Image 1 (tube, rainbow, N blue to C red):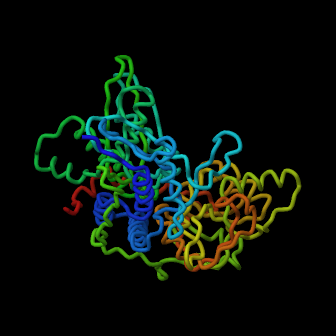
Image 2: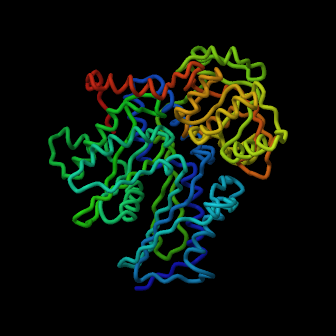
Image 3: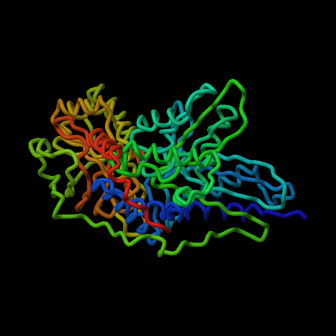
Length: 517
């Protein structure tokens, strides 16, 4: 029997799904993160997870994005052979992209346009997040099976691929590679691993494996009961335990949980080959699955708010130091210590890759900058546009290492005295911070809506044509950050994981049980 899928129904279903995943975490992710939170012994990692959980519930209730990076859209279609499309005004891709366009331009929850056309040269923003990356498979049946995902740059950018020799150890490669990924992929998340096929097949399998439900706690319980595990399950469990034993922890600050699950997909390969792809999924994991049967558009059911644990993070004014950005001095910046928590108040500037590159070009030409950075702090962020009475939309930090090559220029030539971003800084930036007696502060990736509530006023003060990459001035009240690199060049992202890797190796945490479902 032929099933007719109307173009308008497909468009509406795609648009609705993208809105849905912008503010709802998958339930399996929340349950795994909640139990990891209960088990966590590292104060810094536990605080980061508290912010992520609080942000998640705020996003679910407020219907605003979990993360300011609302991703590039991935759509996986399994088209039944008895499915016929009706009313297509162009290609199937055109219909899907119209769904993306409507989903991202919804006036009640406008999402950030992050896609640039022409990736090599002009890199001009397409303004509506199209085109999506689309995969179509023809299968038996009379249904249209759809998986929609929004993949942020922080995690995608940490993708790894290797062509191992058949006899090489997969486990050794993963354990060697994960530490090189830093924390810009916003752990705790999950790892998707594709093994076999050819290079592009391995990568596709890694991506698709991330759409599977998290079930690591169930797998652990199965193993604890002595039930027989298959080889893939054994490998997943081994990698889960050994990756977490690295001590990287939430946001790379050191702790017990780096990954909540490890997924593995395999395909036959050439006898001389063992292609392996690994893609991390971040704390803002966003994907949904639905099936169309011709009866109209599909609307996903909202999850119960009871799924979220009773974790309500608020700024701790007793343990955190309040900082007045409007009167900040180099001497005060130099007094901060690694791991110290601060609450920022006053005015800060923003800027990302494109803004830094333009500043570099203007300085080289001797042109005046649109803003004065003297004794100011810069926040690496590309915010979502505001809706309603918001000062700004979700405004979590972006991966700070992308700005490493500009750090010396900013500290030496503009008068900048401190920076805020996501995750670690590389050796070039750390050396510059040390030389200039500056500091780098870390905000929690995966807590964008929560962070945005600290921003009471926002205005564009430079490079307006760059859209979300423009220079803003934010007026903030008690914005939470952690000192990640101090004026002496000590990095909490180096010392924290090293400490926790050693502590985990002693076995002192083996007696801490994971809460059951």
